[in-house]
Each structure stands twice: as structure tokens, then as C-alpha cells.
Amino acid sequence: MVDSDGNPDFAVIQQSPEFQELRRRLRRFVFPMSALFLAWYLTYVLFAAYAHDFMSQKVGGQVNVGIVFGLLEFVSTVIITLVYARYAKRRLDPQRDLVRSRAGVVEE
Image (cartoon, rainbow, N blue to C red):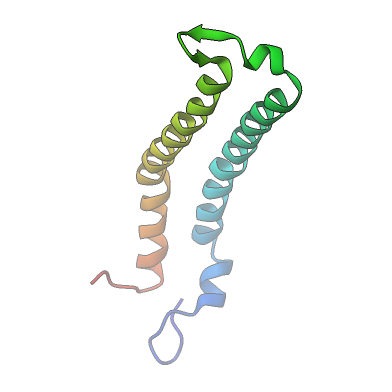
């Protein structure tokens, strides 16, 4: 996976089974999680636009369902970030290291 000058040959690396596995693992996480978050966000937007009575129900004091849902958008973003970081550490980073070692890339 190295060219004649000793540099990584990116075309060969991209075609390698190790790199293909890395891409598969990334897609396996990113696409479903993106779809899930987009569905959650669009639900919030649609409720805010069309379910005024539901979203304006008081939960406590001046806090209503709309505010709770809005705050949950931030919470879900943090949770997705933490889950991705854990997934990357356990499933992506070891595969990345394998691709790098096969390509002859030395960590500095």
C-alpha cells in the first residue's frame, strides 16, 4: 500500500478490505443515527408548527411541552456525541490503526 517513493498509495488503500471494513463500520453507525436524529428533529418542528395546543401544555410553572422538547434536542445531541465517541473508540479506531499499519503510516 506504498508507492515507489515510500508514500501511502491512497488508491490502493481505498480498495483494501481493511479500509472497506472501516467505511462499512462508519456507515453502519452514521446513517441510522442521522436518520433517527432527523426524525426526532422533524417531529419537534412539526409539533411546533401544527400541534400548538399540545406544545403549549404547561409542565410546571412557565415551562411547557415545547420548551421541554426544545431542551431535549440539545440533550439528544450530547447523547449522540457521547455514543459516537464510544463507538469510534471501540470499533473505528482499531480498524483505522489496522489500515494505517498496513499502509506503512507511522504515528508521530
